[in-house]
Length: 411
Image (cartoon, rainbow, N blue to C red; front, side):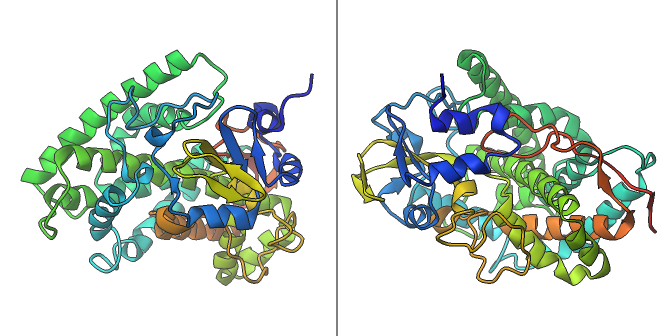
């Protein structure tokens, strides 16, 4: 019996290449799954919804139950309150504004830029540490440890604690997957346990930063006196947890998807090796062609919305499929071709509107550094396994391992 199209997309067997399914999905720009979920897959419709005040990011506002069980922060089963990513104005605006004071312009305009030399040293060190060039697991040896080190440095989380929060991060990332293929009760138990453990860990760090502040975001979140309404302790914990997990999970996928795409397009990889100035355009095209976040299953209609010839009833679950919108031929010419020279590349890789990716400047910088250094230093790199083994997560799509080889490491 053929599965419904949305279940085919969520099926792990299609994780390596969901794009032919997206082509079918776009034939019905707004697809009702027959239950409570509406799936939007075309570029202009997705962009419209990102800027529509009738669309909420707060799942608690759903009144029509869907069949996909998700446990997120702020739900009845959650330990932590809802982070700003899952809130609407005015709560979202206050929390995001306070957090941004410690991250970017106008109050901290150079925080990300000033990390560049340190991040370059991390990249170089990870490449230097590769010993067996005949078999390299790029995820384990490079594209996981690099973003983790970067977000630890930014927040002020001790890098040596990575083995502690790795398990918590995996459990919380898995909770985003609409079809985890397991008992939801057990998954929800692991999610709550991870929230509890991570929350306690961050609470200790925040208390230390209040008495002994340092040059990091945790110190600023814990001691911010520049606003009339600073973060409470629990708000600082929830925000730090969001930044710690989102700050590395997506970038791991972006770097890994990027190197996989370049290895499948060796002529572009060779051009990058010769001219690192190409890397910004390459990264922007990667965000369109292989975005690390494939779909957002957490939107809710808070009023009836007429779009794509369909009325989405108020209270309904609303999914937007970024990976499909980025390949919409109505918006991008020859969309299934990887083309860094593409003009007018207004992709959906970081979303758009109110909830556009908070960490986009850091993710861009990390990925540009990673890919340019890998292209220059790995001599004759090649895939040993294609397609690679993918993570189970349908939301955060990327290889679990990327096994490659090269002839040698250039200095």
